[in-house]
Amino acid sequence: MTELNDHYSQHLNYNQLIQQVADSFPEGPTCFDLAPLDQLHIGGIKASKQLLEHIKPYSHPRVLDVGAGLGGLLRLAASEQEIDGVALDFTHAFSQLNQALNLLSGSECISVVSGDAQLLPFASDYFDCVIFQHSLLNIPKPSEALKEALRVLKPGGRIVCHEVIKGQNPEAIEFPVPWAARAELSFLHCAQDIRRQIESAGFEISSCDDWTEQALMWRARQTGKEQSGQARSGLSPAAVLGNQFATMGKNVHQALQNGAIGIIELSAQKPQSR
Image (cartoon, rainbow, N blue to C red; front, side):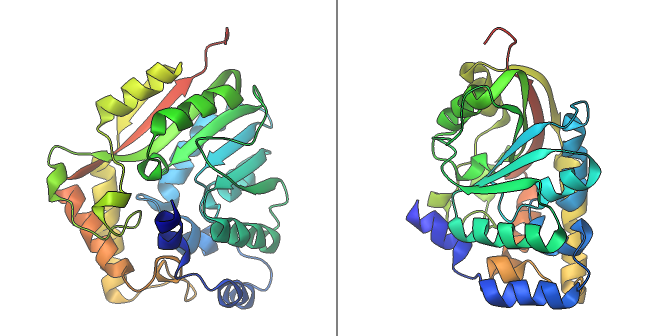
């Protein structure tokens, strides 16, 4: 996992990035201000808002974001409803930046933890909702992470996944992509396999939707913005992913077009009896 950690942390300049955010937004950044840094998944902030509809029925929920990155998902959640949020990521440099961005944006209701999704450092039956957003693709044994998610959820609690999956033409993917510099670091599964592993962990699936078409349209718009040099207040995904980000974006666009990858949103519940 050291190579994976290096993939995400090698381009980060903590002091420079935090100073840039502070200087650009002296009154504190909004979720939309930070989106070029902390909404790097396919679909961006619009996909996050749609994903968060699954926690709206809960009143002041405890929410765990597994593979939180720089924490944009929970900051967006906290801007829309009262939550007790915990952002967990394997890359400690991400967790450090996440904490600093929480302070700058006034998101005190979110705790940040560095840890392993396959061995969660939390008590059983604790959370109302566990979210995986482009996280399973970096986990060698997703079945272990899913079992841990079941353990820390309260009976009746919900798991929500927004994940990249193998498409009909998986061998056509080219690297690097945002989640992996080379194939050995990418752990994609087909939709059927993800469903099987979630059910084997003990969950009851309530919905599974294909978001590939929407993702392709979003990626096409992003490609146009990147080629025209558009950037929000100078913030760019390249500050997180490095100078290869343009190539990564092009490869993702191509992979969506040629069926190498797809995108799903899945929701499942922990049975009340467990």
